[in-house]
View 1 (spheres, protein in one colour):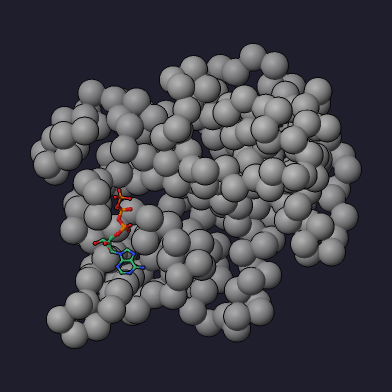
View 2 (view 1 turned 60 degrees about the horizontal axis):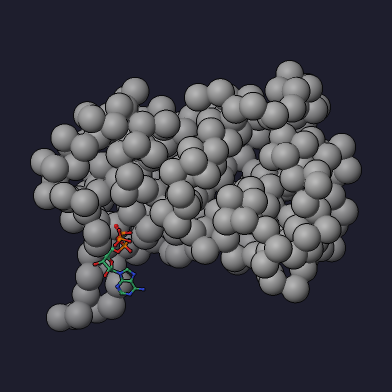
Length: 265
Ligand SMILES: Nc1ncnc2c1ncn2[C@@H]1O[C@H](COP(=O)(O)OP(=O)(O)OP(=O)(O)O)[C@@H](O)[C@H]1O
């Protein structure tokens, strides 16, 4: 998919290449299990999952409701502890980190785009975008911020508050916020779930752009075979286990596979 008005990708790549160490890392799990609760109430949300989210690739995560998709993303992003097994972001094993170092790794290497955008209503688009840095007490890299804003076509929206923007614009602000710290990995939980198909298509195009032109790694949970068709590969989960991995997915093939898993949405 090509995106109009994306700015100069070669320039973005050059900007990025100044600091190659902060972009392009992947993540993986080794025999990851996650159990919620205990005894009779125990739920095994992830069961012995070994999977790779390769660097500079766009991976979709699919599967029926309750399959463990969000749990997998939360564990890989360091938002939840593993019950057993290991999670690596780049070469770093998350379980080996103190809380403080884990928080720092999350802040510096990981970006999140949640379905509900999670923008603060009283802040302008600009202040929402730089919020992670404001919270961390650091200053944004002006040149990089300008690049992200230009690529995401937000230049004329920076002074607006979320209520003054369309859903697609708010999603782009959320994406800018996830990208501005130059995270190695961007995690997105059903990012197109609430969007009309045109805006959803734009967001998916932005993820492709982040991977192909900005050298980032994207992992996205989705129920939508068309959305998954934008990814490089699809990881299928069912009952907390990986049941298939599909490279070069098309919406038709994804739909067939989903039907086979009993997800008829
Ligand atoms: N905090 C929690 N406490 C207890 N059980 C949980 C918790 N979070 C998730 N679960 C359970 O773990 C399993 C996997 O949940 P998860 O949210 O990862 O699935 P999902 O594939 O993302 O589902 P959906 O598509 O409906 O969002 C489910 O059975 C769910 O009820």
